[in-house]
Image (cartoon, rainbow, N blue to C red):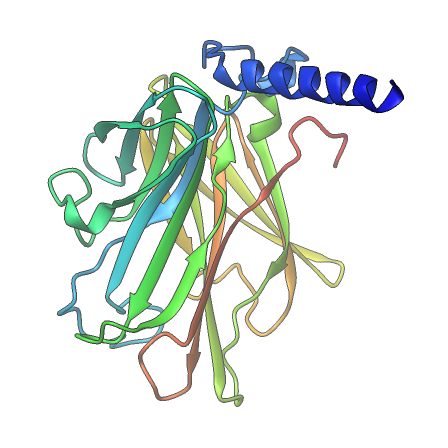
Length: 287
């Protein structure tokens, strides 16, 4: 009898979980800073993507992104019904573009963004927002290559950031900021990309670099529905060859992403790559 009871309870719990996944609350639910429940897995964001065609020459000068790159948007439908989603891509200097697709129940689907240049043009930095009518998981993946070599030289993949955006997403931080350029055979370049998906105005952004008791900073504006990338290698305010913690503060919700590429000195093709989202701290008491 006890075993049967446990089985009944477990079955009831599973049915409750499936039912909750199948519901589609409005993605316009209250922000994370308002104390109300977040919309479950119907909004996702990331701040850095860039597709470069196969005939792109290798990096020709310090700091340039020159490796051919392909990118995929992988979407998992967690619901027991088909779910539709719209992916919107935000650029530095052009209006957003989007596409809408449907994913079958309990399935994962990959979309090759480098195969839809009318939506995601090659050579343009972009950030993305994905909004769905049911619970999904969004995972961008990137491969960078030697020219005309189908084998990836470096890859990155990460889970996008879940929305909606609110007070919590007005400050972000990460611990491992680094640009290496010295006598070592290893060279590392780093970028901070910032997405402002709001149509309601520019985001005024302050980036603080924390190292060895000293601070420096950089300020910029990110226009509405636009993305910006800060090349730390070229930024005088950022120290080379010295680890720095980084805090990004904005007067409106944004999404912040760190990207680092490593090279062997004298070899222009990327050797390794990572891309990770910073951690939001806008709802914390941090100086």
